[in-house]
Image (tube, rainbow, N blue to C red; front, top):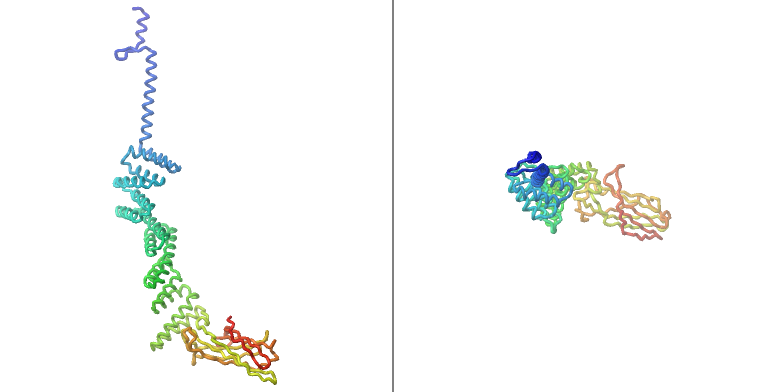
Length: 459
């Protein structure tokens, strides 16, 4: 063997039963490195596309970016490789819900709910309730959340979900026709039981009060006064409004329950005396008259005294408290043709339309021509010793008053032969008396004769 052959053989590398020369050895090393790198990269890809945490994070990021369809594919890959992934099924269901694929979403939520023992989370049931609400099946949503609540009664997420359910349920019923007001009120009341946010509470209370008002109007129209009062009292728990107090008082009055009506008018008076004063006064007077009829004068006096006190405190106009009607006015003339002097007589019929006797009333007639007041005539019609009987607002118990000017008039003092007579009344005597104009009459005096215009011109 030559020296060259021995040197060449020394460079060969033994591989099994074979020898590799240096060039082949180099190539083998490169191929091995590439293969190893491929195995490593494949392992990385396999890890990336099957790791649960990585898929969850990527899917959540896609949802945040609005790539809902991509996120659904990511979560689908997740549950394919990790069938027991509670969060994977929950997230996939949420993605399907955003894609409006409700049936698929419901299936994923149910799968997540089946794994709840492992997680202890109520999110699947809450999500399932949302699917039921979207379908309009509020009863199913209610049952789902109730079951979740029984499992974990302290979970604030369940409480919030129940609030959202009942508020949305109430809103849906409010938009439906015909309206079931009793159910609307019940749903909003239940929503308030679970609400946590103050602003949400205020918003639902407003909806509840509006629903109760509408319901009450319907009940009153049906003459179901008892239920109407019950609903109005419920609304006071949420907002103490004077209008509601008045409505309760008025409803009791319709029922003929005078004592209850007065009680609620008193409550309303404490809140808003100026608005309620007249109504409370009238009810107190009505009660007093009832006691007078029952021959209970002492008890009646207490109600009358309270009525006077209330009317003064609330600054109730006496004209509102004791409305007086002018039934008719007639003007008669008595003229001296030789001198042109005449003394007209004005006959006035008055009635007390209040619900109690009027203890003081004065009537005044002003005789006017142009801008000049020619004469006055005043007479006291009612006194504490001789009151004007009540007429009950129907023009009964009228009294006729005849007024003449305090001095004779002369036809030559009339402008254009015309005279105006203004009729006023006052409820007090002396300088503090306030005269309220009730009617205006005009008469034309010509040649010793008068043609009165008897139609009153209301003021």
